[in-house]
Length: 545
Image 1: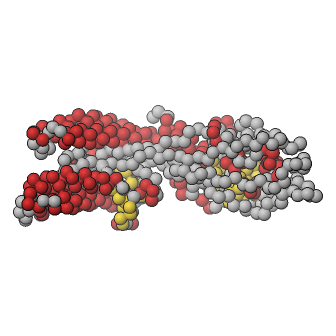
Image 2: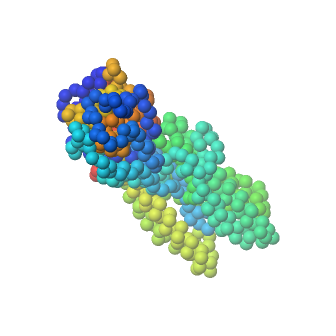
Image 3: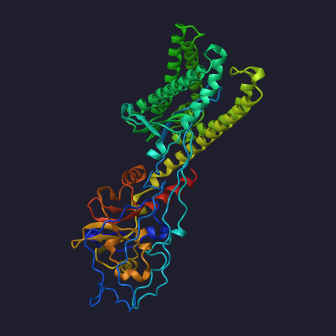
């Protein structure tokens, strides 16, 4: 691959990235460009245009071309946002009974892009360089870009951090934020309605107050779910695994652990502590129930919480991904085979079989009365509700199992994402260099990026690829590259030796569309486009194991 030498001087060679990585339009939102130095003044009457350009003919507008607006904001799954898989997200799932309903996680992300500028019909001034040929620096129009990567939906998955997806912040136990998603209020209403009817049958003298008791039960039940998730969180922190957040949702809760356990033993412990705490809570509620009259409000609440936590523990111990039992099975197979991918495949396929079993078997159990329903009550709205919830839960388990397979395959190919092989060759230009001249130099050198340097060759900023698209061809001789550049920050300088998860971590820490890649000695190696990393990321996911 061609690289750039020290003090901004390009080294000769061939640009491998130009052959294998076509130029995309950057998917991540582009920060407002900052001008690193005073740009060259626009030529006015009686003055000459900047060096290397041609005086425009009479009638050509002489006002400076404004820098294009930054791309519209949009969530992106590319490296500038959060492309990394959630390697170990643990959740708590309850099966759909009439008093206790399941839950799971969130939906896919999308990517936003800016639109292509309208073509300018004005003729090109005489002597103005023509637009670069295909395959050179000038990027293709946004309409020609590859589709953005789709996000994932998983039973134990995660969503990008942010208030729009996190819900209501309830607190930060152990430094980990706990959010309540808006969907939780739906399940609170459902539990209040279903469990309220049962309370009314046991304690008819309460009347309408039975629904207040049921609402209290819904809140207490999700407090138990939070304890389950805190068990996962404390185990992760004990193993020095970062936890992004805990979220309580319609189908329960999820602990978003950002890295995978390093050993199968730790993976097993990390998965098992959640169901273990639910079993402990069930036992505590049982001991408390022995001290009260079962025919009272405390007795009804304690009995409901005891049964609910017992069901949560038992259901999450089922040996299929994305449940905790599936992660335990994965850890066992990982230990026996020595390969984490083998464990993931085994647990994921068991999870898919479990999804089919839930879809078919759960409605049959409720109709037969095995889950506490009377036979005469097994027809009607309750039956339809049980079947619907079974279908939703089965779909989530099936999707979560498939997503676990995709994430495992991606982790297997992550080492192939190397900054050195994805970097574009760059040429150095000074701040007041006209854009047309900069493009000519880049095309002559076979480069696909521009780095703005000072008089001593030290890098100052990067010319934004999206900004070049926004400048009409006939205006390029009078637009200094400094007006299209973004100042370099510490996070925008990455080492050429970064690869795999370390590379994704570096890009995620400082979202941008382009990054300056440097050698260990500080010499310029080239420019890394977030879109190129995203494309390699998607390609790695699609590649079979």
